[in-house]
Image 1 (cartoon, rainbow, N blue to C red):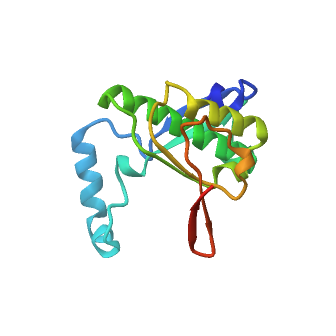
Image 2: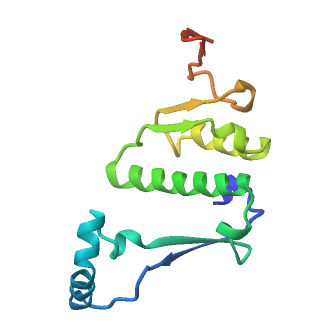
Length: 155
């Protein structure tokens, strides 16, 4: 998180279970109770898949108090953590797709993101869309394409 926020936001991540269930038998009972409703809805309404991750910024709920830019910075920080974990587990970096990320980050956070993507810590391929190329500062190994009225050209 410090990479994206520059260390100016103390962030806490916490697991928020949808239900406090300790045993397999308790889950089976919950599934049985919800079976008719779940079949009608064509989805399972209880289980770990509806659990959540809570994010706190300076001990306040990010969901309630974070700005749009802070939300985007949190998502990027989690994405970078995910990339690092995948690279560690798989032995190579995944391909990263970022859509207009620069429009929602300030200049400082754009620079921090670009520095990470240029670093050996990432070492993967990234595709980024943006409306303003000046926000992104990539090294000479990058290629930029411009799409205008459906025509694609190297830029």
